[in-house]
Structure formats: C-alpha cells, structure tokens
Image (cartoon, rainbow over all chains, first blue to last red; front, side, top):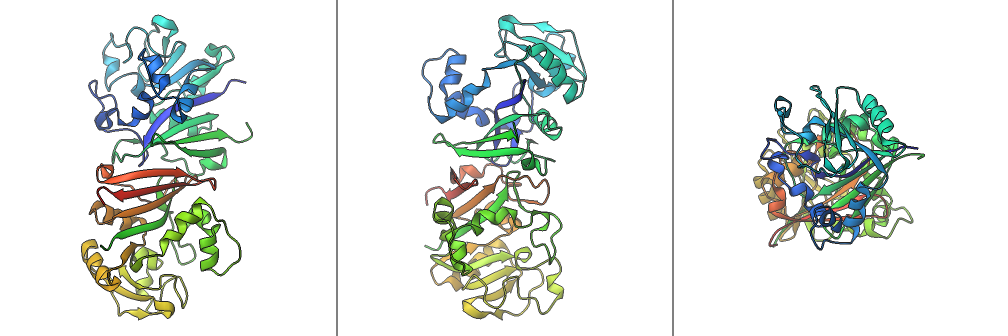
Length: 215
Length: 215
C-alpha cells in the first residue's frame, strides 16, 4: 500500500506554516527560518547538508522519517518558487543543482512547463490538476512506494480536506507569527478521521502526528 | 507582588477558545464541553464538584493551580453570561448560588449594573473600563494576592496584547473546531516577552505555560 505522508511540516503556535511577504529573498516571508530551527539542529539535517554534529534525540528521530520509503513528492507552486517564478523560464527551485528530493517531484501549478531533470534523481514535473489527480500521477511514478506531500500550508490543507493524507507530522514552534498562511483553516472535525498524538520535545517544539484511523 | 494569572484556559488544535453559536443553552457554542474534558477528568474538578475519584497526574497538577494565591478574578461579559444577558435583570451567571470563584469577581461589560453578592465569598462587580483599569480595581480587591484573568478568549487576548498577564496556562485539545473565537490572533512576537514551555500529557492534551521574562 502506497501512503501519502507529510513530514517535518512546521507551524507557529498561532498556526501559520509560512509568514507574510514571501519573495525570492524571503521564501518564508517575515517568518524567516524560525519555524525550521528545530530541524536545522538535528543530525538528520547535518547529514543532509554535509555538516558534522547535530542532535540525536526526539527531534532527530522525527525528522529523519522524511526520507525512507518515499518514491515521489508533491509540492505546491509556492514551495517550488517565489511569487512570480512562473514568468522566469530559468527558475529551477531553491535547492541548486542537486535538490534534496531524489525522486520524481510533482509541482502543482496553473502554469505548467516541461519537466526538468536535476542531478541526484530529482525530476520536476509540472501539473495543473486536482490533489487527487496529482496523487494518482505521483503514486504511479513512486513505483509502489509512498508519496510525500511536501507543502506549503495550502497544499497540505487541501490534501487534508480531501482526506488524501494518511500520515501527517507537524511540529509546533513556540513563536507567534501573527500573519501568514494557516495550516488548520477550514478543517473542522478532522480528528474524527485521524488519531492525534502530541509529544513535547526537550528541544522546545511539539511534535504532532495525525494518522488516518484504521490504517 | 500581585501577579495576573490565567489557568486552565483551553483551546482547540486550530486555536479556538470557544465555538460559534453561543447561547444560554450552549455556553461554548458548537464546541460544547469538548475543550474542557481533560479538566473534568481531574481530581481537582471532582473535588470542586463534590464527586469521588478523578485523575492525579499531570493534568491534575496543572489544573489545581487555578485556586491557590488568587484574591480576585476578572472575566469578560461573554464568560459571565449568554449573548444578551445584560437585558435580563435576574441573570447571576452560570454557576448557581455558590459560584466557584470565592473572591471578588470583576465582570468587564459595557452594561454595568449593581454588584451582586453570592454565597461562598463570590461578589460580582460590573465594570466598563480598560484591561488596565480592571486590573487595578481587582488588585486592590485582592488584598495583595494574585488576580486570575478568567477569560474568555477575547479578554485573555486583550490582556496579553497589553502585556498585563504574568503567567498563562493554556491547554491544547486535539480537536479542530474550524470556527469560533481564536486566542492567539494579533499577538505577533509575544514570545519575545514570555518564556514558553510545552508539555504533552498522557491524557492527550498539551499544556503550554507562558511566563513573563524576568519574573
């Protein structure tokens, strides 16, 4: 069975998955990198970015579930690029020549373009389809493995609303952003379909997992 | 030093401190009693409502901090009564003849009325003043003890925005209400002035404490 999974999705205490004022210089707007500092401290991140060290505790245990068993990723246009990237034919994402996905990666956009093959196994495909349509395409490309729903908040929310997600890992960072894009909007009653577990970390964040009931 | 404290303030995972559709029959609207079930299970609550039993763990340890050292409470009009209670001269709150406050209790309302002395030490006073004005009055009545800010969400938010709260205990219940009144709205950067600690409970909720820095 191929699951749809979300990992390391970070929100503020007031529920924002990204800030306001997104731009090429500020991918998360006024939030900066504050939502992800918990992850940068982990050994998982240090390994991925080829730095020594990194923590080995609870945050790391959650963080490194990002990779195993994933055969494709789906992301929104707002994760792939800055507002307006679709007018730049040279834009290939934020991640340089060798992006950290290493699988087929489907970008949901109203401005599709030809696929881009990157180094390290990542190929970006651009689709103007529904969440269900994207998941079908990604599952086929994943060859029986799971599909990661990579965000941003609007995409995760849309997939949750359609009950297309099987497992969701969210961290809550104790800052208040005040403005931006909320993850949980319009999801009344979600807990009826998901088991929710919360774990506070010595690192200062909370880890939430939502797993589809009966899975 | 007389502190302003909030205890056992319960919100949903999506941040709502009360639901939509508040009425005399539904004090929390469509939220019902779901935000407070964690508290009803505690020994603190069982003692207060003269029932046997109740849990004795983490939830109880947090819950029973509600009472010690408190000399007065401040609450909003929306905690004291249903929408429109000010047109009912007989309304004396939800709690019967002996309310669980046992101190002077200040109700913030644009429709003040004469004070009401209840059994057990609770006297309701009605004030049409600013948060700072209410805190001044409550501190004087508290005789050197602390003042509890009792809610609802709008009142707690207003006191936080004015940085009038010294200690805030919030529980997050893993349900999504989708609509209602949010606690955290408009509080960008609050963490700059408060130490935030999060603890997940075996009972399934998260306890957050925000304590003013340098206190």
